[in-house]
Image: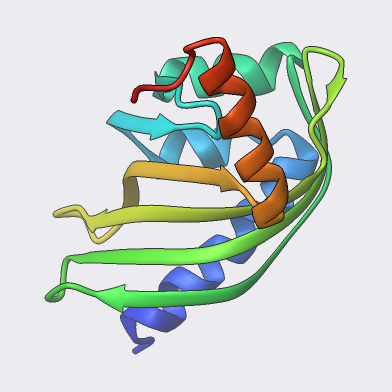
Length: 145
């Protein structure tokens, strides 16, 4: 019987492949109905929006490779997975390729299936670029003080 870590590492690898193929069926099964994700610009979306973005082509992933994945089980039926995804992708025609750090919160349902209930991703940026962006935002009072 595989461990929680083995099960979720295998599922994360399948999700990487599914992103590139635009496999909505796998994501439809893996994302919980009440799934919520926060993207790198702070927008919170649900399952249907995530599925629609992929199905419509608004989000097109050309390559996706996750590394440094750490699975932290919480009991037998929940786990937090963190990792880094290096992606070549476009959103609404704009290149969004780069390195992203992510967190996925999984729960194991009564039927034994793992589902993601929450996710968060952040673009990996050099410290200097982040500090410049904050300074510019402060000039325009776009960031809280």
